[in-house]
Image (cartoon, rainbow over all chains, first blue to last red; front, side, top):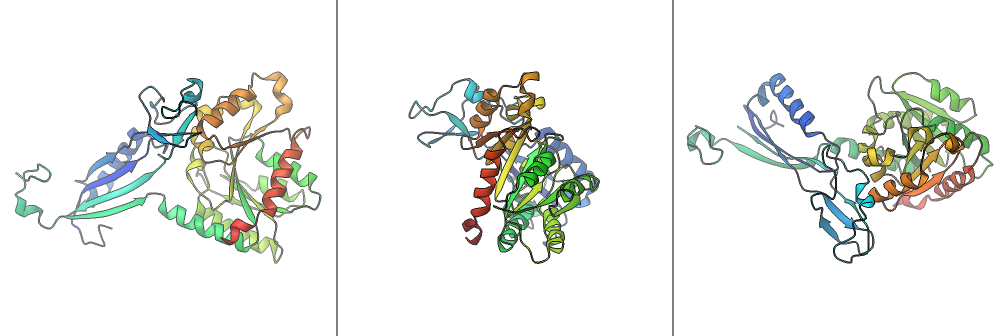
Length: 114
Length: 242
């Protein structure tokens, strides 16, 4: 893309990585650093990662909500089936159990170049 | 100082800066080939099923047993994915089922481009005949295959009893996108601390709509549920047209 636009260098790359995408952030940023060294055009690029918070959906009323801290274990950016074992219920209808909604995106959002 | 990014360049220096809005999935290339595969399967008059599990959960054995139990209600063919060797395709062919092998040469999952190659190989093998179902047996791995749409119509994730009932909790992504969860080797339940309840509970916490089957390809226990699922899939051709 940088070639197409006859850019001399890429200055910023913005990606959006969902909480349930399975992407390990440390590995992702490490790989970007390696790529920077290999690729002249990227040498001065700054990587910006947008990380939307996890969303949950109610199995009964279907409403979506943000997960509260402690709902899920996010150490590895994945969720074990902990929600269920915690017996956490929907804060709207008070009945339904919650499951993860979306959040598996790995998007290239913007590239800034000169 | 530049007020856009705080660098030391004067504003003048940034005049030729371009910002491209892309907003595309990094998996977009894979997904678009997957869509073509889905259409291709549909034109062949077949439904495709992507089988995902760890190595050794019994994917090939389940397909062998399925071949033995066929009673003319549907037919199937197999695209085998492995890192190396033709072994799995040979096992399936030995049961009289058309099979092609794709080897990834190191990659731990199939992607839609590899499957596209597999479809063309399979068409050669099949000639003019068309099976009702085409299995894509993924590389044994519960992690990476989950992220790649291959163009399948249904995704089946398998866990065998010796692996332990914590698999859905530990590999949630594989269960999030699957339609059916098959617990295999249930003849071994007396010898392992596998809780079917725990496995189902964790799978449904992640994906409340997932169906579950328990079976043993060795003893034949639970195989009728599997055969019923396949039969109804093979008749479910409507979605292909859409």
